[in-house]
Length: 84
Ligand SMILES: [Zn+2]
Image 1 (tube, rainbow, N blue to C red):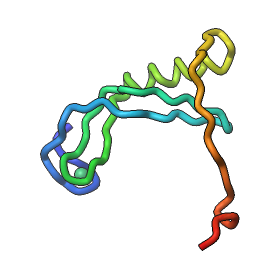
Image 2 (cartoon, rainbow, N blue to C red):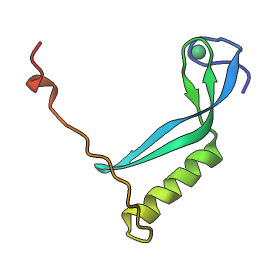
Image 3 (cartoon, helix red, strand yellow):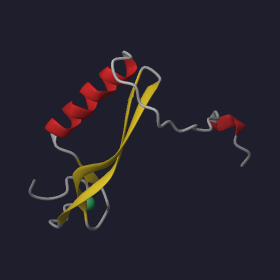
C-alpha cells in the first residue's frame, strides 16, 4: 500500500476498526479488524486475506455452524420516512 487511492495522502497508519459484512440482507459486524487508515481522509484499507476471513466467518455464522451470542439491534427506516 503506497498511498490513499481517494486523496493521495501517503500517510497510512495501522489501525483496528469495525467492519460490517453484508450479503442478501444478512449482516456480520466484526470489531477490532486490523487495517490501514488514511491519516487525512480516514479511508480504511483492509487486506484481501482479512476480508476473506470475515467472509468465511459470515458463512459459518449464517449457516448456523457457529453460534454467536452477542447481537445488536439496528433501527431501520426508508429515506422517505425521514422528516427533512
Ligand atoms: Zn485519504
